[in-house]
Image (tube, rainbow, N blue to C red; front, side, top):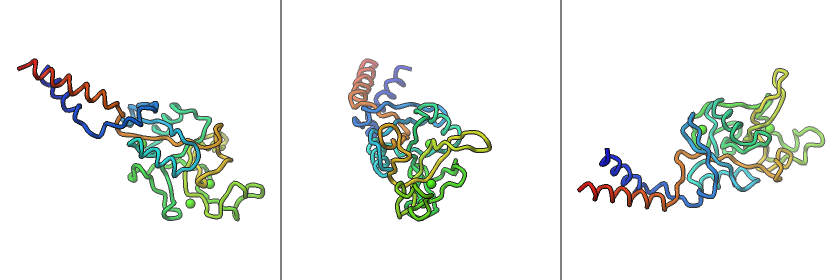
Length: 202
Ligand SMILES: [Ca+2]
Ligand SMILES: [Ca+2]
Ligand SMILES: [Ca+2]
């Protein structure tokens, strides 16, 4: 048992991909359903910025794979706010793809969405919140009535839009990662413990 523990600790100590000190500043939440870790971006605003920030943490802007994952996200993060999710048709209009897990097929669009609204198709008074380019980026927690009940759905929006912003004046992204980022010191400590245990055994 001790030799096994020593081997595991030694192995953990040399895992190179786990070093990401920047990610330590974030508070991560573990979802036992998906086996993944989640946090919010610090920057509010553009979807493209949220994608970049997620990548810098070793993760990706969240892929919502099923209703259970979406329910967990709403429970874990403030469900009063809208969040960027990693879903876009920016490369080809109408062809929605996930930047993190392209194999996911789950969607939860609000009725009538995605509508790719532009300045020209916006309802009177709403033109100022639209662009000529249309809408290519998805947010979650878009609360709309569905069959007489208020439901949290998705909407496609422009890369920035104050009308769906939250309190801070922008939109945060949800980051999903497959491993928990741990400090370099932890891995160094694990290595040392593993080595010590091996030496002691001899
Ligand atoms: Ca996911
Ligand atoms: Ca679009
Ligand atoms: Ca829309």
